[in-house]
Amino acid sequence: MEALTVLVILAAAVVYTLYKGINIVPQGEEWVVERLGKFARTLKPGLNIIVPYIEAVREKVSTRDIILDIPQQEVITRDNAVILTNAVTFIRVTNPRDAIYGIEDFQLAIQQLVMTTLRSILGEMSLDEALSNREHIKAKLKEQIIDDVADWGVTVKSVEIQDISPSASMQESMERQAAAERERRAIETTAEGNKNAAILEADGKLEAAKREAEAQIALANASAEAIRLISDNIQDKELPAMFLLGDRYINSLEQISKSQNSKFVIYPADIQSAIKGMLGSAFKN
Amino acid sequence: MITLLNESITWWHWIVFGILLIVIEMSTGTFFMLILGISAILVGTLDILFELPFKTEILLWMVFSILSVFAWMKWFRDKGGSNSGQSDYRFDTLGVVTEKIHPHRRGKVHFDTPVLGNTEWHATAKTDIAEGTRIRIMEINGQLINVAPIDKTD
Image 1 (cartoon, chains in turn yellow, brown):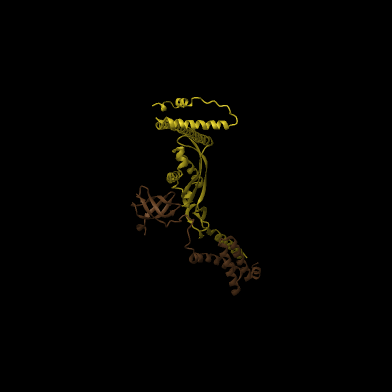
Image 2 (cartoon, chains in turn brown, yellow; image 1 turned 90 degrees about the horizontal axis):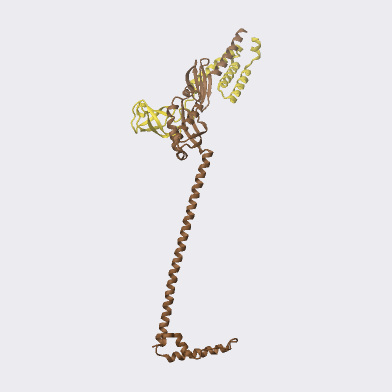
């Protein structure tokens, strides 16, 4: 009976020992094992056996990438503009031992470190630079934290700046500035248009006046030519002229007599001298 | 008591117990139950053949459990496998020194494929390494990669 009790207790001890000694580490994790309180080794994924009672698993560390959110913070740039920025960073534990023993809480530490470094980098830049140089900020950030993370067994894979936005008041004044700039351009464009229109109108008037003058000259020349031609043709031949005149005179008398309302017409009696007076010097030799 | 157990615990109890442990193993995946289960089935099988007393059965169960752990360690240990997602992932990537490394000063290396999301890294080494030398990773210390020339480590 006693032997049986001992055996059962022994069996229970074996079961418990096996239970403590056999460890299956899943892929993506590494377990830090301590031997009597001191670091012994890290267990890799798969089936691992540790010496129970002497060795113990101190911490299970994920070796997959960890996504760390860097909360939004206010930063003052070199030109005293207040901007709001937040980021996301991807880190990976590359040395589980250092990640456990090198720092109290590596996630919090990296978060704080990225926040402060980001603030100092943006503080050295002007607002316009900060808004347009994200790649530069990323590269500089990774460069600046090299020394700080060396003892933590953690590698910062990448830091992505999610947002860089000016603060509300800054945004308002930037919008006002942009609006004023557009207003100025609109006024300039209108003035330019008005000026061009006035010039074109004046040009039109000038051209019209020139043409008018030319037309008057052409008209005067034509009249002079007509008179010259008439006087050249008539010259001494007073008789045919007189005949033509008389003929037209009679014709017009006829037409007047045909009209309904003008039955009473006065003609100059001496039509010859009247025509001579009208034509002036044409009949003078 | 002992006679009662000797009479009442028969071979098939051990086999049922063993199967039960294996079923539990399937849902937990600890491997530890599997060892105990297989040992119990083995004990049941021996009981059929030799009609063992209960004390011997328990003793054998313990011995088999311990032995199977050693047997696994000796013959079935998983040696290979991908190290994707592990801390030594991509440690076999080779690179070229782009900025001379002195033991007391950092240089820069360029890797053939990205290591930890980047191909360019600051690097340290124990010896002087000239530009253009092929290197392999020895250790990763945060943002610094400890490298060594290939020919010296081979």
